Length: 517
Image 1: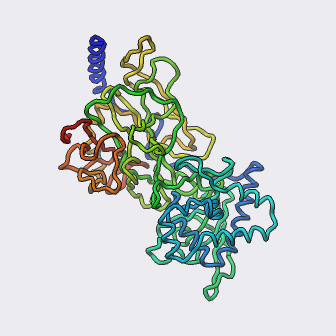
Image 2: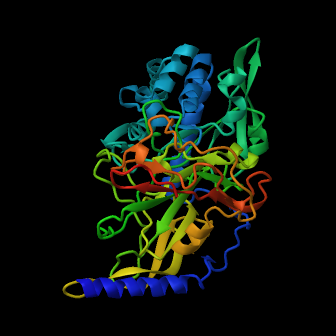
Image 3: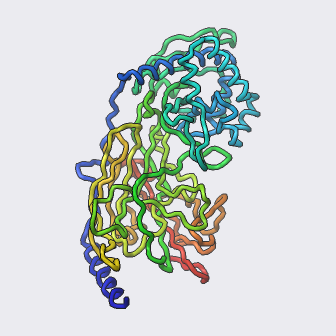
């Protein structure tokens, strides 16, 4: 055992020396400043044509419901509660109140009380209009949208195949409740009949405060920034935000694949790498959609690691999961972050911050013997198309022998993701380069102000989920809260399409006082 340790020690030193000569790379043929190309898509299959027809029927019902101001207020309350990300609410949660996730969120309850609206009344009026139409096919379609709890915080419709029909309120920030006009009955309506950025819609006409009808208008991003608009379509696969209060966004994504074998006992010091801020400057989805690829953009941040993978066998085809420590809640999902960007945030080039501490995690402990990892940034689409992250990583691998042993080597990877676009960012980086340059200005300035995750632990409901008490957790330097921005300037917003901050935290597993790095 001692001889094996000596061999491994010298192998590690040799590899670290080679790492210092190796530069990090971007994905081949990828320019970080190339704007995404969004092509219009129209329904072609019988199922798609039937779906678009049902969306049109639902929009006609909303035209009738919106003659009652309370119904407009109720839908806006459900969207402003931010129970679902990307300025949406699922139709099933509006029309099946006994199964609705809305009732579990305090912000929806408080808005409903403040605006004097009731979910049950809205649902009764909706189904009354449905029954007047005597359309059995529409009724069957609507019944398939009933939400049901599968497990923990995971939700889906009952049959698992119905599309997540939603009401989408683009640029809702402009008409926020604080402005006093967000819930007023001035909402234009549009039924999604294509994946596109411009389509005909309907603008309400009022006479003496009473809705008398609609006039045809062309709805696009410019129109939606000056006229409150509800789009009835399939905006995207949405799940409720975490926590009972609402107001969330972000979240985590479960990525399939084999699990990485458990690592050896943890070192005394652990270094956890986070992505705490991010910015997206171009739209990756159409304004209007019937396929689930509309509205804001859902960007996913993943990690590729070869650590403790077998020296033989197929290439790595999955992203590295984050192992759930022993003190994590049973329902907690440890995977990479899902960032959600509204169209207004993209247009305004807004630097965003992860909603909670655990959502910022990229690697909970980047061990010294994991020489390289890759950052994978991509935009999720509801599609059968696949975009691939391909490359090779140097790391500590598991030798296929008996007994098994650890060796330094390289391993190829090819991870496919559901996206209609090339990777937004694909960056391989060595551990040595990352930690030696993590505090260096990359040419894009420093994040101003302090992160929520500071040493005084005043963040709301802070929890490390890593078996370490908060007072044993530290930032590298208590005197300097600054971290550099990557690829987009923090102040001027110039640079690539996507930018981020990449800080790390050091914590000590033991009984001694915190040691600052």
